Length: 359
Image (cartoon, rainbow, N blue to C red; front, side):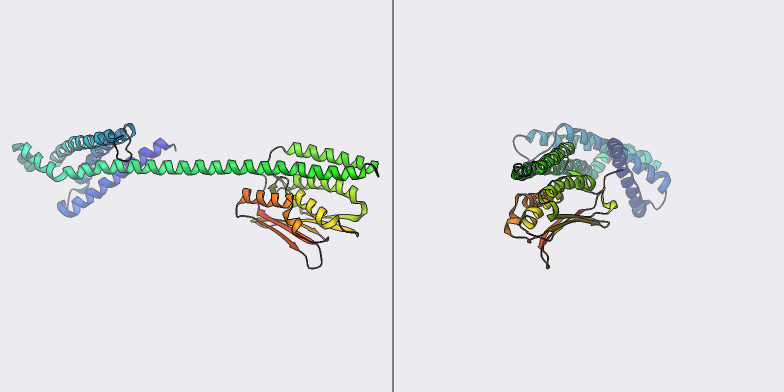
């Protein structure tokens, strides 16, 4: 149903209900009879007249909209004041004729004997009501117009806020990419003179990583499957660097793979675990990536058995960037926690709304 049809149904529906109400009041106060054969048709026709008069008022409101009373729009107020008086007088004259038509014969003869005097009495009794009715229509129109403009402004503000959040998120995402690239190139530079074969493998993996970054484009969200593939490629670079000292464990059920997550979410968290939790260990280390969900939330954990979280871990570009992006994308519907584990090591937990790719 289009908006124009809804307007006509609503507009004439209100007048029809008003007709039934007025007919009921006339029946209760005066007639006690002729409800369906006189009172209902008379009030329907009477409100048809007022409804048509109201349409003229609405047309004037669109042509000469009212605003705050000042010298600039004083003309519009004068037009509406004059127009409402004229419309009320004309419509009231038609209503008076209608009342005569539906009156008993003896009443008609009395009216026709002195029509001017009768019309003056009718006019004096109902003109102010008719005038108020026209201004009620005008007020309802402007109230609906103000409400519509307010909702439009709210929608535009929400859309602008959403576009701003997307732009900020993309800027943060682009900030992360050169960060991990710089760190990876540093690792390659450290190996290129001592282990050229390992450095060559790392360059190949880095090329794969850059290709995957380009393939994801500027998407704000990707599937967990894509994010895991990206993170696994990054970890394959770190595995070459640390060799047997780094073990990766994954506990990501298949039913979580289609979940939507922020692009570039896990890699900076894993990189943070490697840099601050594993790199300084003389012994072997384990990084665990875990995921599970319920009907409302997706929970992701990055766990390491390294040195634990210190001030540098929390202040790093990756963690600060991730926290900001999560706030931009989900506002308060998320959690981002970094905690030290009792037995040593650290755990980073991200909780975001559970959503999957359509189809």
